[in-house]
Length: 114
Ligand SMILES: [Zn+2]
Image (cartoon, rainbow, N blue to C red; front, side, top):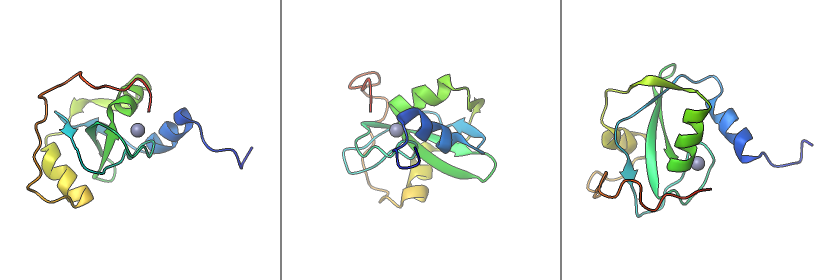
């Protein structure tokens, strides 16, 4: 049992453990290499921002994980009052000049599973 890899749900639980998460407004679309902090997927087409209010640390997760975490009721209702783009740059060290046509195609290209 210990050698068994965690299921998707388990990874989300582990990610959410001990955190007080709040959402950023908006989302990011990144054509470049990125990853989901919750499940480790390297191909999220959209990234949503989550701030851990306990540790003031920011995380970025794919749309599928964002939806699951919301369903798990581990995301607090108020939004974070911070800019998701600068938070992402701070957290991941991505160059500022990346283009972010966020919101342009909301709802398109969503994956049903990661
Ligand atoms: Zn994920």
